[in-house]
Structure formats: structure tokens, C-alpha cells
Image (cartoon, rainbow, N blue to C red; front, top):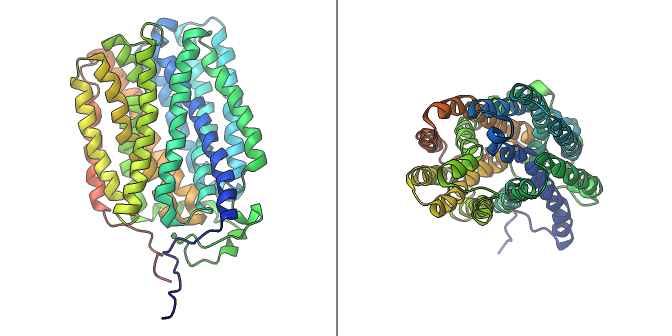
Length: 445
């Protein structure tokens, strides 16, 4: 019998030396993104106490958050294609350095006396600048990993990588809660600044853009650049208009972007206000009930880990590396979790349901922005595709800051989290439109 010749739809059998070096590449990259998450969601811990610290309303906190969300989204229009040109390694170093400096600036700014108006203006500018640098992080991770993983490996790996990234939520919210309870509140921003500086040094030493730059052989990743000889990865990346045009013309990516808009509303709607909800409705705070608060933040991380791993396994093992069926199931899970969170009366159940909701929310976000962007963008446009999906997600997040924050000043908690549910329903409906979508080039060469 003639042995079957592997096609680009088959994951290659990597030698042990390759797998070990790949771990040395993605593991520090994953830790770096976790620390970037810490340097982004440290603001959420401050937001939980902005009323008592500086007299800020929900709408004013939302104004600061929206400045960051929309600057993040706008930056990705440039930073995605720019990352195609400069490479993921340089982009992650820019993200780490810039976020470290801006977090330090926020700590120094908040050390001094300031009224509510000055805090809103100052933090809008500084948090916005932080988010501009942060926007390099996700596209850098996708760009680097698109050259190291075959498309058949990306679902399970995306779950593992997403689990690592979920650590960042505990670093921000759990460790941040401990910092707030035991140190001056402005240390919420000082601690992430130092951690990011350390990770920048680690990345400079270990991370490489592709196997060929680490002394290994490049290979065909089988995505929408599949069939392109591996050595063409050394050629000039697409120009900015070409990269943007390729992504915007892709019918699947356009629908995934709409779905990620919905994800952005739900994700930030939960993360920005869950701390205030637990404190004001259930009396759960860092200082009064530290064990329950830590359980809530650990629940967010545990939920993110479970959601990411479950998404990856279901996608690759059950649905043949299709991403939409898993995303559909997780959008439905969001509806159930949000309904339960709004109706529960026990503080213990509320703490548990926060993590349960995060399992469904973070799972679908990682699957679409992290994994599907590599599949349908291909190596040459992976960062641009990730930028589109992540950027549109943060456009949706801006509605949470402006619209939901102002609404909650009037209705208090009567509208939250029910106002998020229609976006989960719409996301599920969009996934039905791309149920069988796979990278176009797979199996065609």
C-alpha cells in the first residue's frame, strides 16, 4: 500500500526539539499577555471604589472606560497592519514598554489631590494612552503564534493559551484586590508597571516571530495562506491598504466582527461593573468580605480557563476545527448565566455565578479573536484580522461605558445584567450564518 502523502489539512508531526522550543516561545508570550491584562483591568478595581475615592458616578467611570475602549479600537486599525510589517515580537515589546510607562504615570497622577473633574480628564488621557499601547498585545500574540501552529493545532492550543491569559484577570482583580486592601490605592497601577517591565526583558530574550528565526524549519500552516511555500514568510508583508482590504472583503470575518461587537458589550458589561454590583447589592468587598471577594476573582480566572479549554477541545475534537458551532453554544450559555446572575439573592451564589458567566463569555472571545482570526486571516494577515475582531469588540465595549453607565445611574441595578442578554442572543444568531466555515485553502492543494 502506498503511504498517504500528508496534505496541508493535516497537522505536521513536529519533532521534540521543535515542540520544546515552541513552548519556550509561547509560554513567556502567554505570561506577558496575562501581565498586560493585569495592566489593563487594574482600572476595574479602581472603578469599584471611584465613588468613595473621588466621588465619581457610574457615568463618569464609564467615560474614562470608553475613552480607553474606543482608543484601543481605533488604534487597531493602524496597529494590526503595522504588526504585519514590524513582526509580533517587536509589537509585544512596544505594548509592554508603553503600558508599563502609562501605568506608572497613572499611579503618580493619583498620588496627588484631585477633584472628580480632574480625575475624569486625567485618567481618560492616561488610561486612553495605556490602551493604545495595549492594543499591540493581542495582535502581536496572534501574529507570532500563526507561524508556529498549524490550523489543526490551533483550537486546542487556543484553549490552552486562553487559559494562561485568564491568569491575567486574577492578577488584575484578585491581586489588585489585595493591593487595594493593604497598600495605598494608587499602587493598583504601580505594581503592574513593575511586572510589565520584567516581562519585557524576558520576551526580548526568548520570543521569536517564526521557527526560522529560532534555528528551526518554517512550515506550511495550512490556513488561508496554505499552499504558500514556507520560505515566502521572509518576503515583504502586505501593504496597509492590501491587508485591510483583504480582511474587510472576507465574508466570514465580517460576520465574526459583528459577533465580537456583541461579545464586547457582554464582556465589558460584566467586568466593568461586577465589583460594584457585588459590593452595593451583596455587600462583598475586598476589605469587608475578603474571602468572598477573592472567590469571585478566582472564579473569573477559573471560568476563563474552563471556557477556553472547553472551547478548544470541542472545536478540534467534536466539530472538526470549526469555530462557529462552539461559539453558538457559548453565546447560549451566556444568556443562561446572565439571567441567573440577575435573579439570585444570595451573595454566595452571586459570587459563583460571576465566574460561571465568565466561562461562557471568555471562551467565545478567545475562540473568535484568537483562533478564528488566524484561520481566516492566514499568516500574512493574521494580525490585521485579529485587530479587526478585537477592535470591533472594543467598539461594543464603549457602549457599556457611556450607555450602560448612564442608565445605571438612573435605574441602579434593576437593568443589570439583563441589558446584556440581547447581545448574546444576536451573537448566537450570527454564528448560525457561518456554522460550517473553514479556511478556504485547506484541502485545495
